[in-house]
Length: 285
Ligand code: KIV
Image 1 (cartoon, rainbow, N blue to C red):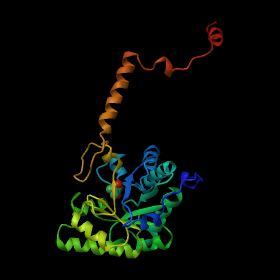
Image 2 (cartoon, helix red, strand yellow):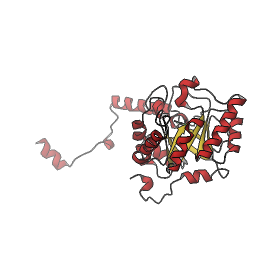
Image 3 (tube, rainbow, N blue to C red):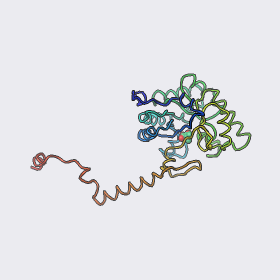
Image 4 (tube, protein in one colour):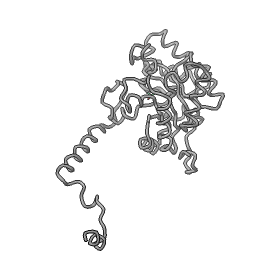
């Protein structure tokens, strides 16, 4: 049983709460992929924890998110759900777990919901995934949309590039956002699109928009945990603000540990267990 259902007295955030927050307050979303980071994010009252398929890159060291499997998503979602008391846990539907049709989408979302314990799912795409979004919402599974730069399509987009830079492409994004709202998505992630287009989409839809590289006029923001804390050093996208450099802090701590083990100052007496003199004497005899 997850902490969210264990009667802790804490009121978990629901998709309805998120939906109703538009225009009232700014929303926060942050990724997490394991128990410890989920407890941290949850304790900081972040509204939504996204178990993003970005875990393929920042946790598993792959080049993109395409090879992330449903088994991996379920595994990490379970760990996050154990650590989340209040934040709404949203799990990413991995590549090819929903594009192939409504039935596959239902089966995939059911795994994230039933086995993983997520309370919402996110899937990438606009017009092509509307039947899936509608079917999931009709089945009682809250859905987060995701348009703009959709990393699962990085091969056809030609790389991690800003989207919606022409008037025509921007118009398509506005239409897709409206269609996702119409299909029942309770919020929509806007990734790497020009700020004025994100502002326009935010005005045009009645569900909250959650931006990442989409400017400050979105209804909320999302960042990757490892980017915010300076834990991932392979590259730092322009839209990331590193609020800390935990890599440096962690490296200093690990070097201190190595030095102290080597010079014999760790473990100190307070880190070791003793035994009664009587038992020690008996043992030595
Ligand atoms: O997988 C992920 O972390 C995401 C966010 C970047 C929105 O989809």
